[in-house]
Length: 87
Length: 230
Image 1 (cartoon, rainbow over the protein chains, first blue to last red):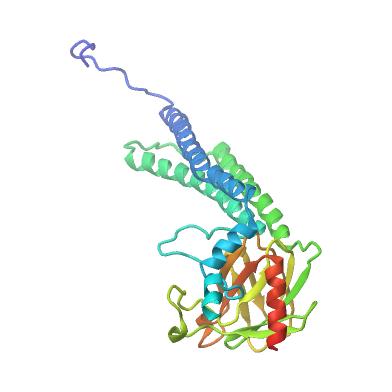
Image 2: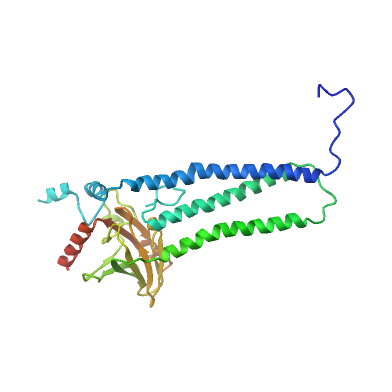
């Protein structure tokens, strides 16, 4: 406002305001929504896929089974300390 | 099993469930895109002080907002159908198990190589050990070999039940007089829980399913033990 001479306001847009608003806000809406979508993809979807890939890359069935067995998870395979107690 | 205050899907224990999780993420992308678009549009419209008095029609925008949703639907439908057919794929199963729903327990039959049959009742509260899950533990669990393609045939003896294991991405109605087939493959060892998913009477909530996925040698040892006990 300091650079406008006293008594003169900038001329408002007289024609095509709706179209110009639609273009401006349409672009902002598209950028905003695609930005949030990309953020979800980069922060949630892609890391989840990578996590599953890494989990199964070096997955050792025997090691995991032995650890779970010793923790007493399974009914069909009891931990060695339980069998030792029974003996 | 699900943990308290869990919001998302359970961790996958089968390749099909993994694909379901990825599909869920794909659909979430579409939903987030649409929600953000609508949210911003509402914000602008509510905060705007202008009205266009001469607005009568908008053929172009009406065409645009018809075609774009159609494209979005195709973007969702194509992977959805691919996943749907993937869940039905059964590639040379090495084992067939029959699960029969009763009021109010499940019974299982392993009749491929052995003649093993047992019932699976929920463990009542008084019989639970420390650390057991309430309303989820059973007396006899379904034991399966890990990384093995299994055919699960599901039926019922009385009313309609449904055999469900969410972490394996499995749910199938158990209908009396009908055999429904499920393709089952556990990618990792562990115990996986499920509950009957079709209202079947007073104790519908008290007939859970528990699967133990173990190495093949352990599975064979369990089969031998079951045969000996019978």
